[in-house]
Length: 396
Image 1: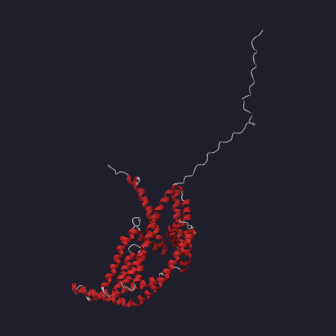
Image 2: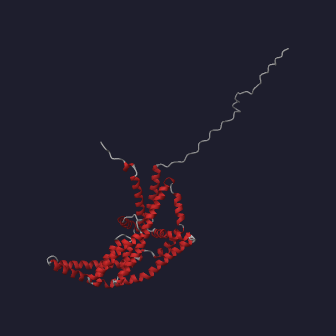
Image 3: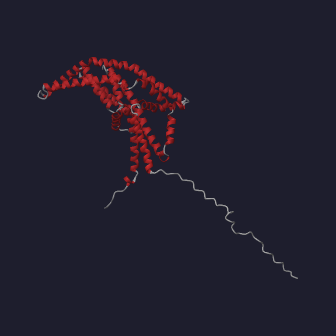
């Protein structure tokens, strides 16, 4: 009896042979890795900035004849933006704040024009009527001074021909200054188109002032991401320098114009109002306004009063104005925030005026501020770079 269990037949396992090719499933191709971010080359970045700068210069050159009201409107909007922002913070809608500010500025400008322009025209008339007597008065004062000087130094130092030449040149200078002042006052308003002042500039200023925050946000969104932080910092530095200089300088010019006009009129100078306003407004160009006003006022005082006492009084007024400007107005309005050197501002204003006229004068200070900020930025980078920090060689 076979007690052993019968041997089990080997179980039949499924065949491990691969299926035919016809029934074999196709292997899916591996998914391609997502494309990485493209990196701009140095040449592309340089080309971008150079292209933007070239486009701005080309547009400025092509449309310089019509850009003046728009640039003037942008200056007004930039000047009024802090006030509009403050009004918005207390609950005034931005549109209403912009409208009220622009209308207020137009009203002030028209009021000043209605009040001052007839007075200026009257002074021009007085100047043209009394110009011959002014020339004679200056000639007489110069002749007396030369006679007194020749008595002290001797007649061999100052003969009659030299005295006549000096008297003639002094009269010619007074005549030139008088006619130039008359043309400046009489034709200054003609520099601006009446239609542009009354319609285009206020309208454009209103829209720019209303949309100023949105325009800045849009420009900020367009900045290249790689350089956005640097460009924002440069823009903040430019705004700090430009706003401090522009707003402080405009307030300084207004205060000096009021001071010079009131003081010169108070001492009896017939054209004191015109000369004072001219000196104050030209103070926008550092030192030029004060020097021009001083020379003109001294010549007119000598022509009108005929004595050196009146000249000394006028000189004292301008010296006091310089003291007030240097020790009271500038420290309080500008302080240490201004980083625009006077020589750089003078060069920028004259260069802009020569290149693009009044439009160039409007753009001169902003461009000077931008160039100054960029120059200081690159100077800081240079001082932190190995070009500057490399130790000197100790041997050959």
